[in-house]
Image (cartoon, rainbow, N blue to C red):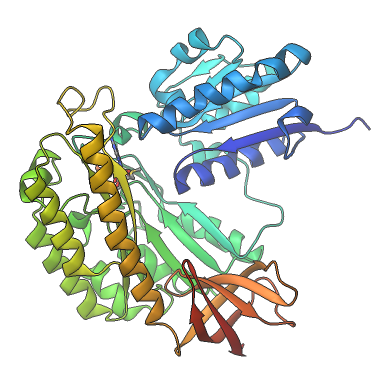
Length: 439
Ligand code: SAM
Ligand code: SF4
């Protein structure tokens, strides 16, 4: 038997890309490819790209440049570009980097194996009518106890700074039956913690089971909470305007729905929120947070922020800091505004790099303080932890708490996939540590 062909797969960007990469690896496995950790060993190098900010996009071209000597030394090597840069730039990638053999957009990657076999177009950035998820192989093989599961793709919100509606297309939801089947398959393979993914996941409106009509995300979560063996559910990323009453209620009703919610707000200034086309005010966001906390008082909130959006004044930035102080986040991702071609904000003048840098640092300092305070609050408490892997120290296990905080536990008998109760003994900069109390 000949040696299996090898695939080197690099993933940039969000969790949805992580999920897509996993599905592409599985699709290629059906054609006899095994994953390798090194591009030098590979027969196929696939870069699954992110287009959200300029830096993420440019990373692709610097990585491709670095592959030149390898391609020269190994002419049989195939190099593919997948994901959102592939979707946005298509043939331009091959023009700029002739060493690229194939370009496959984020909606067409079920066709990747055929492309690699030389049976399809070498550039495919269609939004095909067929559903890629129906055509990908069933998920098999071994894996850890935590998984992502895409339930919704695309976005109809058109925030003024964002490329997602162009790269991922219009909002599309997968039917509940397919999602539940996929979740059951994951649980059968040892998964206990599933995060439902979507660019706008709480706008989910997929076909329900039987003749039920479309389901909302809360309806889907209520059904999934009944899957035996599945211990934890999460979902990300949500838009504040799609947090409906039943979804908020689900946070109080479903013990399996973990007390952590990523709810991007971007800015605390009404002027900037309007210019961003976010379609809500700071006060509406704060009122929403209060309703969510009434349903689940211990919930930990995280968010996304953009600083330096065109026209953002010092006062606008102060309003963002005021919102952060009013909410008290457990974590947050913050970014300097990056103008993206084709978006409504693209041609507007930014605030200047130095101003944006200074604001980013200031905002991140406030968030770090809040994150540490949220961790400190856990010290002395009993929390659930799902072990994901052994730690670096002998007898140590590493996992996530219900609140998605990283936890190190001294537990010589601990096993990956175990869900245990621990007492938190200490908090360090980015993680908690503790001792096991019981299974
Ligand atoms: N759908 C989510 C939402 O409504 O907030 C987020 C999707 S996006 C992949 C993740 C984050 O990237 C956004 O929340 C935003 O903070 C950031 N982002 C998007 N476009 C950006 C841009 N042009 N410059 C800087 N950050 C950006
Ligand atoms: Fe982008 Fe999110 Fe806005 Fe959609 S809701 S346009 S994905 S930031």
